[in-house]
Structures are given as structure tokens and as C-alpha cells.
Image (tube, rainbow, N blue to C red; front, side, top):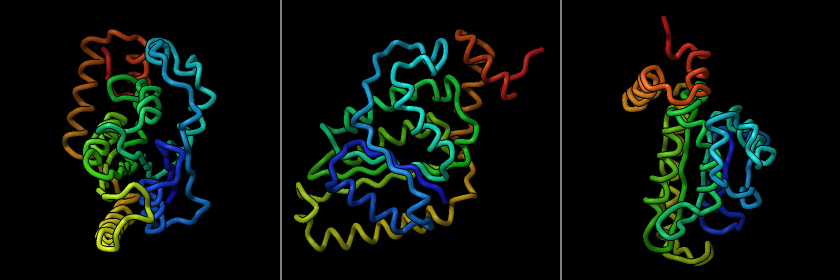
Length: 227
């Protein structure tokens, strides 16, 4: 099992520790895990060139490409972000903005349907569920076949302050999720909602086809056919 982890923040606090606990439950060695901290990546400037022309035109392509290649080689992709004002961190959101051209509505990677996505977030109070939901939406639009969410309220500002009762509860949740991922890895099939969304995006590309680059991509992979 190969795993790519995308950390939405560089510090090693609650979300980082929770993520490491999950990685320990998965059937892989340390050499199979590649972790990225995206704080140093330039913010998406909304130039739209990745969608209209070519993703290689992106001014931050050199920083983004190693992460994309790692994701393509992985069986499991983890996005981990602490809750920042009821959502993922701004750095992680900017990374997702860089990935807009990979959405099903543009140029998805067909191999993503065989992968597992895991969205992780912690919070002292509220917001972890919203953050994992936002990350899960990105996974689904990337055409990830199976998505899991792991939000957790730690009721503490640091890992050392998390009480034992919550730690035990968290460990049980992580153990169960780890078992699900281990069992599912290598046997992922997209659900009906994902398949329907992909079908509708194909209809859109064939019918509207406003972006010639996207239409060419769908034709190249045999997802839409012309006369």
C-alpha cells in the first residue's frame, strides 16, 4: 500500500498526531508513505491557464508536480488540516485551487477511481466536520473512488492537553477506520453518485464543449465518442 499525505499546516499539533496514529494502523512501511507540507507553495493566482491551455503553464508547477506524481502513484491519499475558521487551512485550499484542472468537469485522471481518499481534521470546539466535508468534496471531484472522513473534537489546544477519555475514543475510531482502509485497498469501486456525476460531466463535454482542451482530453481517453 502506497500512501501520499498532504498536510495543510506545517506544525506538529493535534491534526498531525491524529494522522500519524492512522498511518500506524495501515498495512504499509515507512518507505511507502510520502508526506508533503504545502506551506511553501505559492498561492493560486486564478490565471485560469491550467484549465484553458495547459497545467504546465502554472507559475507554481515546479512545486505542485511532485505532489501530483506522488498522488498518482498512491493507493491512499490523505488530506489533513486543522480547522481554521470552520474550514480547511488557506494553504490547503490554495493547493486545491491549483488542482482545479483535475476536476471531473475538466481533465480528471481515470486512475483516481481506484484510490482511497481520507480527509482528517481536528478542532478544539466546532468546525472539524465542516473541514473534512470540504476536503471530501475535493476528493470526489478528483474522481476518487472511495472517501472517508475523520473529524475529531479534541477539546484542547495541544496534543498533551487531550484527556485520556477522548484519546481512548479516538484510538477506537482510528483502529476501525484503519481496518476499513486495509480491507478496501486494491478493491475500490466508485459509488453510484460518483459514476452518475462522471456520466453527466461526459454529457456536458460532448454537448457544450466550451473548452477544446478538456474535450480533447475526454476524447483521447475514450470517455466521449463522436461520429
